[in-house]
Length: 485
Image (cartoon, rainbow, N blue to C red; front, side):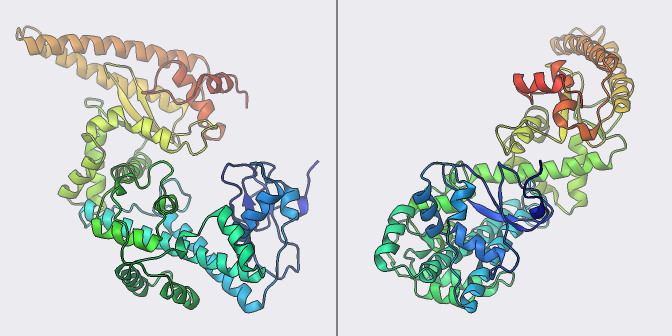
């Protein structure tokens, strides 16, 4: 039985029905379906307020306080939602709340254009034509300023909601004691306030509402602010911009100013952004390649990935010195990063929901510890025919090159030549075993289809140890090896 079918494909709000931090509400596009795990809040026809007003109310401290009073568990139910009263203020107040809530959503969507894991990704923050360190500092300053604007907007919304519901001072204090003081309402130094106001006045994308500007003007001033000395942990686990400000009990304007003045590059976040740029570059290279297979090592009959990356970056306008700086951000030489770390980091980076399987869209196929054959493949071009090609072309070329090199080393007596010859013999044996795995895979009827999903397509390769690292756990392997869809 299909329940609530009349609400399908309608815009509204969605939220997670369970979570230790309570419900968090987001705009729900009309092209999506809701479910028990991801319920929706849909306005009835004729409702006098829009989705942004509803989003502002439900994400505010007062609604959070009410929901916890109604249900102190981690599960927010439909019954709890039905008991939340929606006050209808004067039209101009409702329009004001809706407008700044919409701006918050727009800012978050805009920042998503710089994140590879988002559907609306456009470009890396590490732009060409500028030194990577400078590009990152500019981006952090820009991103933090916009996130600060969101937190200031939210502080304004919280106070406006108190007025809408006509809470007296005692009631307001009860909510604040339970939910915490919005960081956007905390004191700020004179110089930080002036610097942030100047930044706001110079940017055109998200102009603050006049009432928000007035709110910033009247923020309490305290020039004796504590100096922050741990910006290096910003963006790490449980340390996003808002959580960092809350932990320091400091207005985000002050935090933004100090971060800008100290010009700290958080190492972990910078490495992640450099990595995302590399993923985008490798993705483009694979998409341009005839068969979506690109070797990491030499002597396969095709240009190595390292050289293709440099060519792709050059085509995008990155200068050689800037390329070197980007590679340094990765934490190890590019060739070693591609061989030893890229695939594992990509699998982890895309694993946004820990209880679901990892779904890398670039696979690192490896013959084993001696690296006889190392290739990246794109799942969008991966097929049974390409598996044949992997053996006949790439493994074949590599085998010929290794045998030629081994012949050239015959008769040489120095230690380095003997060590190299022994390694080549190990590689040839490894390559023979790898080709046998391909034969076994083909004999099993392996015929990957994109619509079958990453799990089903990659499990047979992992079973035969044809990947540089494991992607699926034991339970997932059992499920996908037996999948019959």
